[in-house]
Amino acid sequence: MEEFLWAVAVVHSRSFGVEQTRGKTKVLNHLLLPLADMLNHGGDELKCYWTSEWNTSGLSQTDLQTCTTNVEWVTEPAAPDALFFVSTKDIARGTEALLSYGDRSNDHFALYYGFTPKNNPYDDVVLFDE
Amino acid sequence: MSPKPLTLANPNPSLTLLALAPRLCIIGAEGISPKGVDDDDDDHTPRNTEVFFRFGMVHRSLDALIEWYRPLALAANDGCDEAKWEDRVRAAKDAYASEVRNLMLAGEGELSAAEPRLKMLVGSKLDVRLMAALPELVRGPTDAETELFWDVVCMRCMELLTDMPTTLQQDLALLLCDTTDGAADGQPHWRELWRQLDVEQRWGGAEPEAALRASLVALAIQSYEHRMLVEFRAYKKLMLTRALAVFSSTSSEAKQRLQTLGE
Image 1 (spheres, chains in turn yellow, purple):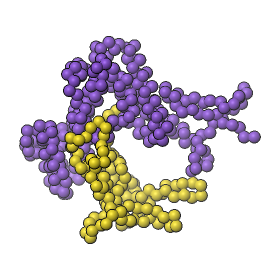
Image 2 (cartoon, one colour; image 1 turned 135 degrees about the horizontal axis):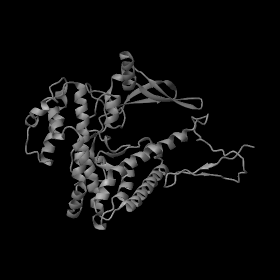
Image 3 (cartoon, each protein chain N blue to C red; image 1 turned 30 degrees about the vertical axis):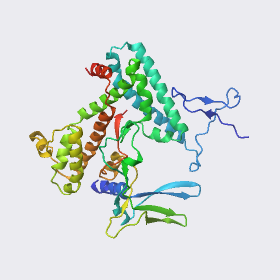
Image 4 (cartoon, rainbow over the protein chains, first blue to last red; image 1 turned 180 degrees about the vertical axis):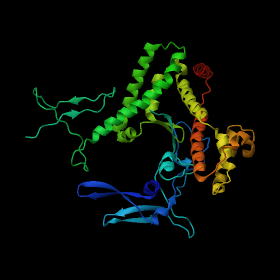
């Protein structure tokens, strides 16, 4: 049981979901990619979680600081079984490569990745649940 | 000759599905309806059935909202008796369903159906379905209606905050006094938040160590997993606390009514 839980945790926290087309059918494959799965999360962050500029219309782009992501993964039709990791900006030597795990709430990050991003602009709080 | 299908109309405001015959059907003829045509769905798996099921879930979240506000509305002594309350509920359900329909037309139907819970996003942005339904339940005197609406939202935020076992200040104190491996990396971030909240929330220049009273020592963070959960909880409290600051009304009449509702 312990090994099963470990395996499930590995798949959930480290796999890449890649949509592929087989004939007329699209399938979502979960790929485990050693080394690539070591890339940490980077993404949009609020400049400041507590800012007086917020109002009931929500956040504006100016409330976000520059995205910390500097790598993204892409697929190429010519190489359907390959996943490419490409830089999205100049990366200085010694800078950590960061990949976005998605624009998700902290609930999703905590459940599937085991951490909560700092100042996540996509977090939410449930006011009424069934 | 292949049979022509029945047409499934989009949900009407009362969330009732209508199956419309596109032609005259003779008695005894089978009613046939497509179950969704999708590129990746050669077998016509009844994908729509799943979506319709989710509507039921969405509706239960609305029911939770209605159940929560019902005793407050009836206790408000503003002339809302049981009969008028039922009128309000019907109007709220209609407004909610109308908003769901708008989301479907905007191509966001599946997204909203997949998330039945009524949420507030960062930036104090409320779920549009909640924004549609709640005003129908909260019908105060005309002038105070808007203020009352926001006060009721504040009341819910306050309720959720007080239901939590610790305060935001205590959680930040726990994070700032955390000595487990890796804790120091995040502490400048929490220190800055503490400084901002000290001003905004008038904590009086308190120090985290002092705020971590003896009763909280037992809650001291013990591990990475423990720290993650405290961080997770702190962010939810930040959102609720921020919303309270944003939504707080200055209307004295609405304030008085809110006090009445809360008593």
